[in-house]
Image (tube, rainbow, N blue to C red):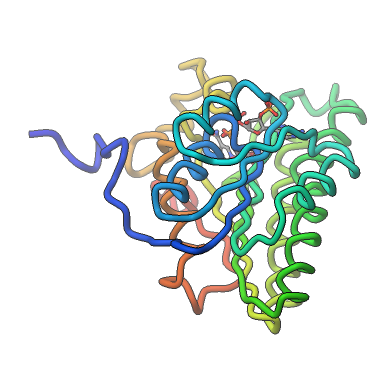
Length: 256
Ligand code: NAP
């Protein structure tokens, strides 16, 4: 019999329900964002998915009924317009992120700026538009920022990425404090290496993945569906009193 700890179901049963709610998921073309958008749609939400690649959005829409908005969140205008195009939103997942790997001594200002623009600034701009709408409509809401274990540990080649995720955790805390009085909860999930195209690019080489794996007590990397489940939980009424947390989804990495 297979061990459920080592072989998680790729599509676990639904635990959350979002009927009548509208969700916006950024970076939803592939990976964790796509998995989150699909889970929210299966759970009853009307989902708007943002990504640059129109092809990915088209296939997501065909498979799940999500509405696609093609936009580059790396620009101020792109981020603002994408958030406005989504209309009134109850649930936001700031998931879009990039990892441009460079040794620290060769790290370029261009890659640093690009990383901060997508991983942090876009989350700020999109959440401002969404939260202003919630406040104007007098409606509560929930926001989840997809951060990383790398917000609290240093990883080689990840200078800009680690800095961006540390910033995203701090942005989450400030948003939780300022938006909480309006009934808007803001939390982050902090996954370990997750088996998406980004995860494969950064950790596909066994020489790099082995030392990382050895620090994860569960002995494996995360599946995108497992991160999506944590995102959905934090968005749900089950997490009604949870605000301002940075939730590790890391098999125990941070405790080891
Ligand atoms: P991924 O497989 O590379 O997917 C990222 C998604 O974001 C894609 O759909 C991409 O589509 C979109 N995106 C990237 N730049 C964008 C931009 N400027 N404007 C709009 N959309 C953009 O990444 P992932 O592994 O699913 O990562 C999702 C999130 O989880 C990121 O924030 C990442 O930092 C975080 N995370 C990942 C891991 C991991 O190991 N995979 C671990 C911890 C945290 P286009 O390129 O078509 O736009």
